[in-house]
Image (cartoon, rainbow, N blue to C red; front, side, top):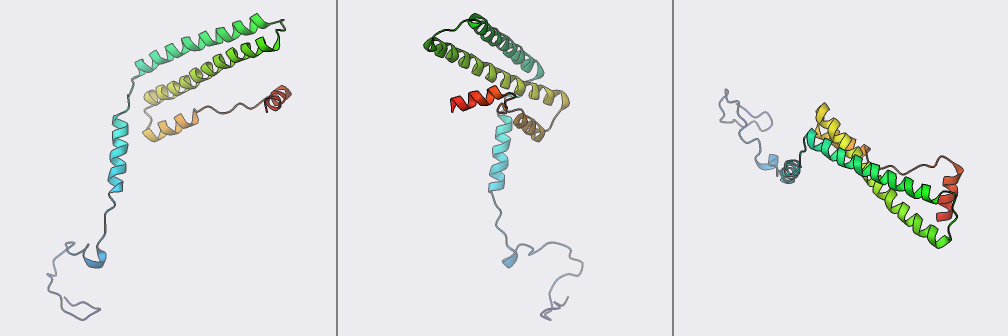
Length: 159
């Protein structure tokens, strides 16, 4: 065979169909091993997942539901106990502190229940890892948007 650019005759079998020399000299490449490390890291993370089954998630949901009911009752009790009363400022401050603490715990329980719900749907609907990640991200807490002028008033007072 003759190289059309140089005119030199090459000592190659006409029937040769291999890839000899494909990565030699200027065609040489350096493989990026970070790809392997990234994949191994992701596999390790996936293998390390707790991988709860539907029964464990239902159990978690039951415990969370009981906690939510408790905090709802506690918040309601405080509001009813305070109804029609005008306590001094230092007592109102203490009551507000207790209410804030209870409402934050309630919010955390509610958020976790949203996550458990997503995980249960993922199992029953056989979602891919990518779909699970997207749905869990979408289930995150979204800041409250006020519906009345009182929300804006309180936000302004709080600074």
